[in-house]
Image 1 (cartoon, rainbow, N blue to C red):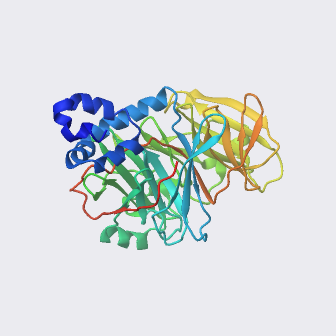
Image 2: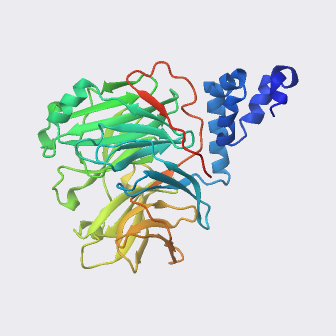
Amino acid sequence: MAQITKNTDEQFPEDILFEIVSRLPAKSVGRFTTVSKSWYAFIRSPAFIARHLNRSIARNVVGDSSLYLLCMSKPFDEHKTCTLLCDNMISFDEVYDVELPIDFQSITCRLVGSCNGLVCLTDNHCDFHGRIIYVWNPLLRKFKFISTTCCCKRLYKKFTEVSVGFWYDGAKNDYKLIRIMYFEKVDFAGCDKEQYHVEVYSLNSGYWRKIDDAKLPGIIKCSHPAFVDGALIWRAGYSLESEIDTDFILSFDTRSELFQRMEFPDFQEYHSTQEVPYLVVYKGCLAFFVAPDCGAIGSDDWSIWVMKEFGVVESWVKEYSEETPQKAMWPLGFTQNNEILIDTTHGGIIAFNFETKQIRILQIYGYNLFWINYTESLVFLEKRSSLKGNRTCITHEKATG
């Protein structure tokens, strides 16, 4: 390859080279930036990065898995390692084991979301959640710190609760964040806009923008949103202390930037205070997983409800309901085999198949476990001179996997 690249323009037309290199693994392509200045500019161009990403996504669709388990080490370990495990239908293969190049005030972190090879993390502590945010590319060992404006710092003193979401805006080729701040106790029946604050961050511009006409119908009651049909989706209610039967689904359409309230189906077990609903994505549809409260005595039934047509309450269907031998702490997501990964009260991970009733006990351990859609990408190689208020850090840990 080194001999070919001495006279790349003479031996290979750029369009042919573009097609060849865009089909190679991201890890290999990233190393080619050291070949020469022309290769450096070629690979860092937004057009090439976009084409390479599209090809990587296409490969995942036709067979390669895009489902990964992100395992963080215990917070007080000497080295803050992060292991990325790929679901290959039989087992989970380690892809990376790198040192997390990010410091959080509370030592632990919380997943905001992931897309196109980028993972968004925030501090786990209530005082810093949504205020300390990093967007990280594990493959390239690069991250961006999302700055907080002076105005937002003042708002943090005013509001008590914060929720954050992360997504990719394909129309503008931009990565965005939403930050929702509000009081813990709000009367949403007569709520005025002074009781909450909604803003959107653009990675391209590097700025937070307030959504002045945002109408927030309730308080978000889960930290990590699901993403379906271009919408971020949370479980919500009128207050953090409300009974479970007052809960509803809050969606934020990332295209129109409007909030919408959707209802859960009317089903008996949901009204039991022993049951806890978790929103998940099942075969591309919005779904929720109902598991017995890990500390409750009573039913051990787990069930899955699926919204077959997004936004249509009448399309809720109860797919499965089974009694299981272990109580669930929380579900992580669905594997390629449609098994649901569950973090149990015993600290281990199990994979349960609702169709075959089989359980697999996985030898996977970690302090923070996050189930993500992940595609190796070169995002962050391109220059973004307009990124104001951010800092970019490149770490040099030895790559593995």
